[in-house]
Amino acid sequence: MVEHLPPDSAMHRAARGHAWQEEEYLLAEVADSVRTLAALTVAVNSKRPKSVKMPEPLPRPVDEAEEARKAAEREAAEQAYSDLVSALTPEHATT
Image 1 (cartoon, rainbow, N blue to C red):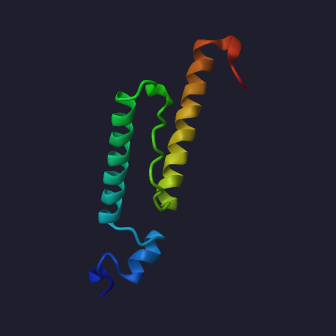
Image 2 (tube, rainbow, N blue to C red):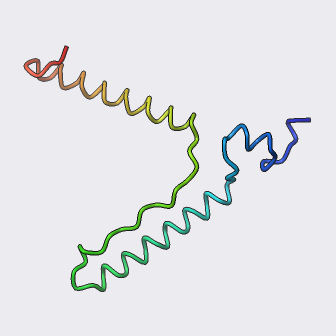
Image 3 (spheres, rainbow, N blue to C red):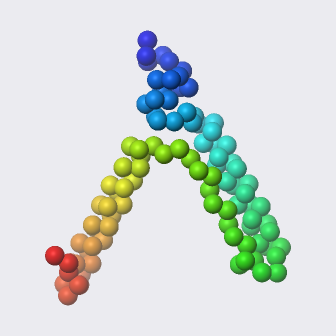
């Protein structure tokens, strides 16, 4: 019975940790794009385009599993970079 519950059911929301579905993510992406295009339009037509600040993206709910995966990838990339620098420049090796 659990297999056929709709994506907005309480069980799915509890598993994800939030109630956002694909539509909410798409709307947030569209809103971010519109805000960025508006800022770019203002910058292009401004006398001081560098003074126009780009908008921050709208906040999205945090998926703990995805964040943990990204953190692990970041840590692995930093370690690989450190290993490469150590191998190429022994005088800068960190032990």
